[in-house]
Image 1 (cartoon, one colour):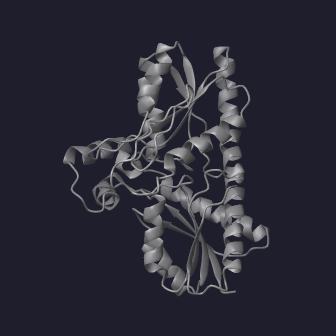
Image 2 (tube, helix red, strand yellow; image 1 turned 90 degrees about the horizontal axis):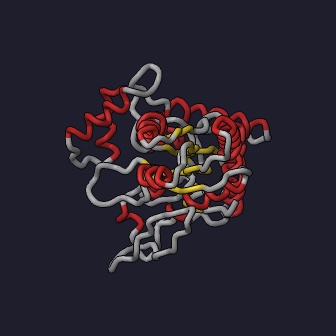
Image 3 (cartoon, one colour; image 1 turned 120 degrees about the vertical axis):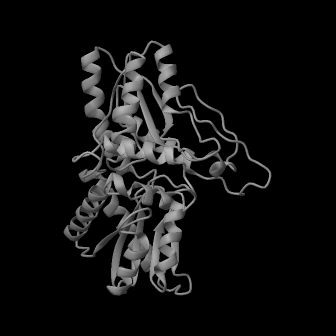
Length: 349
């Protein structure tokens, strides 16, 4: 067995407002972006963070790596944990090169986007593979149904839901959210019925579309369901996609705004919104939810509250440690297959 390590992969974020144009070029793979879009995103960043204009995503992700390394060491698995970002420093390619220079021969790779999507996990996977050379990787395709992940979110949700329900005098509904993706990325998904409480706009298959549907909408909804099952007293829960991008073409929905409109029409005066696709604070939480959605809800006469993000959650750390150890076990089991250096796995929890 060679030298082992864990590699955590994340989206990445710039450190200052001035770095946003370069960051956005990475996000859209160098395609032109309208100047007004760049300026709007700079404006949003200018309203968040301490100091203002700074997203804490990178620091929080690096902290999650440190906590994971300590958790594994305590369990007798003394391995380094590396963190690579797709769209900002430290870039995935640079980190994988450093791992090779450090003598790492095999790694458990975990994407910090639990729900598998071609627009996130697929891109991270290709970036890691491109620099892996002879390094053996166990790449976790998705972990949306990991029980410890659901419990970590539920732990945060219980506190906020109980407090808000007491303050308004009755149990309040919950909106779970995940980041929207362009409709074209899930076009192979078969049409599926909607329930009255959990609505998703399911695209129909298109001629020539990929044979395998993108699992992202299904996995995001499944995580939400697992969290809701762990929080007694929720009278109803809803699912929405947030932070639709400015690129051309439709994005999957329903949107948070449309969901809030529907709740307001039904007389709802207070709601808890919990993003279950994000593992730490960043602009889609600190601006999109805490500023934009809260103001939108207030204009409808709805009080909107959000549970604390997972960030340094011990349960999240335990979930990552469990997944890393499972990855190492799969690498050990596959050690007799040297001609297949990259192994992918999607556990069932």
